[in-house]
Amino acid sequence: MLRSLRDGAKHGFLKYILLGFLVLAGGGLVLTDVGGFFRGGVAADDVAKIGELKISAREFDRNVRRYLAQQGVGPEAAYRYGIIDQLLESEINARLLTINSHELGLKVSDEQLKHELMELTEVMAQSEESRKLALQRILQQQGISEKEFLRSLRQETSNSLFKNALLGGTGIVPRIMTSILYQYENETRDAGGIILTNDQIKDVEQPTEEQLQSYYEATKASFLIPETRTITIATLNEEMVKDRIEITDEELQQDYEANIESFTVPERRLIEQTVASNEEQATKILAEMESGKTLREATKAVTGDESAYQALDEFEQSGLLEDVAQPVFTAKINEPVGPVETPLGWHVLQVTKIIAPESIPFDQVKDDLKNDLLSSRLTDVLMDTANEMDDRLAGGEELETIVADMGLTTEKIGPMKETGVTPDDKKDDLLKSYQQDRVDILDTAFSFDAGETAPVMELQDGNYIAVRVDSVTPQSYEEYDSVKDELAKQWIDQQKSLTNQAQAQDLLAEIKDGLDFGEAAKKAGVSIKTYKDVKRRDPGDTKLPIQALDQLFALPEGETLLSPYNDGYILLNVSAVNLPDFAKADAEGISTIEESLLRVLPTEAFNQYMNVLNQKEKVKINRRLLDQMYGVNNEGS
Image (cartoon, rainbow, N blue to C red; front, side, top):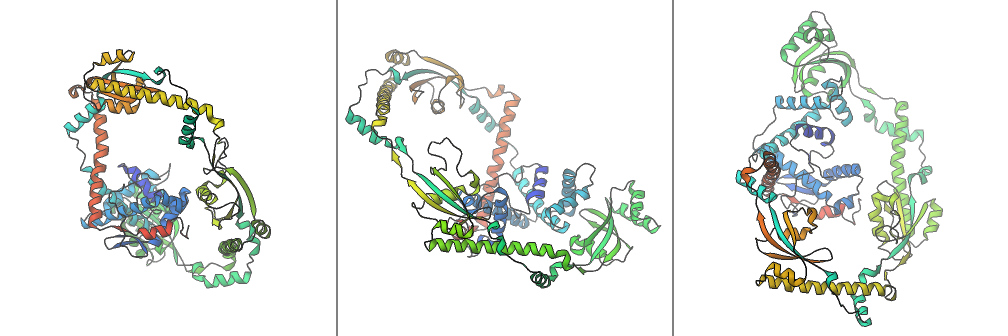
């Protein structure tokens, strides 16, 4: 969920604007936590305050739920996993950038906006499709007007330019930093190893019965048999209550008349237009029209083809750019309009028909009205039925009685462990048909006692369920007698390991006191294993654990370390530290290091800048309100 809004590539930024900026209200999802924002001191109905700017709970919640619906994540789960905080943090950071860019006087000119729009439509246009048609297709998909789109594009472009300017100041990597990192990454070491396996320890006595009993008690958790539960889920859905709803024609007529303004289409104008690339072309097209040519003919005569011409289309005044809307809706039929400049280019237009305002007849919208009313009432009836179900459960009625009365479906699940799988861990997730809600269902199933039914809960798909705990098998432990042989083996292995560790530590102490590493190997009765050109964090064929490698590269030459190794321990002595000569480094290796630093340094610098903005604008978060809205016990989830 937490992808970069902008990775510095122009096309990535433009694609994001197209597909996501309306959903998240201009916010990003990547800016890391640079402010420690969550402090309180905000109005009761605002989730955040940025200086004098406020983010209302209603506005934020609308964007959050729209985003979570796409991701298939519930509000409570999103809050637990930090997604809600990240979304709010993104909104805050986007607004901080906007505030700061305005203070610095950063503005996006019409020419820059036009350039961004041209690149955008070039990227999104399909084969043989003009840029204008591509834009129209995009606006239709997003359900917004050109004016709304350009306003959002201008703001997003401003923020992007500002951020890129901030990041661009860290484009130089000091040579000394590159050389240090190159040597660090390419350093190798030689070492000698004394391997002491636990199997070398002999004559370990068998444990007494008392020792085994004590060992069993100390390690009892490893023989735990987890608690399991069996539950019944009773489900209420729309199909079960749909028959209760009856909608008459009289009701539909009343609804139609009460909302007649929603079915009134404002004045529209049928227009054709050409968007020329410059004013000179537009003026010539007008001149050709005055000589008797149609707009299509005039466009071809001046530009050589008809690609800039757009055939007749119907527009309301609100659907046109402001500079175009006013002259078009004051023009007479067949009267040329223009040239008019907008960020899209130079427009020459002609109104061919004026369509007066009109109301859509009742019969045409009757079915839609009925569906809308049915949907609205269905939601209410479903919720009322769920509340009735909840009240009857709270009153002590048996679940089976309620299921029979309301026509609910039931499903018995279990026995299952707290993770939702069978006790033997061999079967699929028993709640696989409830994936979006499995966490909440499991929490409920393991929070009530046997025989109890939890309050009705709403699922992500809009259905309602009641969960009853049918039976509980408490956690237990495997009996001592059944694991006695295994305990004895574990106890002996542990004694060998402890003895081996103690001997290895004694040998390390002797080496630190001056015992030659070769003599130490002879004393242990093993040969020294030689390791050449060992790489940092790359065991290779050495089979050395990462822990041992970390220690090896932290020691100076001649020092010795002790580390667990396979089934035993290893003493490693650093015999040589091999640093590469940076002067002989290949260009590709240096380039890789510099690219790595260039990726890290801008982010660090940008985070520091955002931290300063956060402190300057005194950003505050209403954590209490967020807890109420998205916490475990919130009513809206």
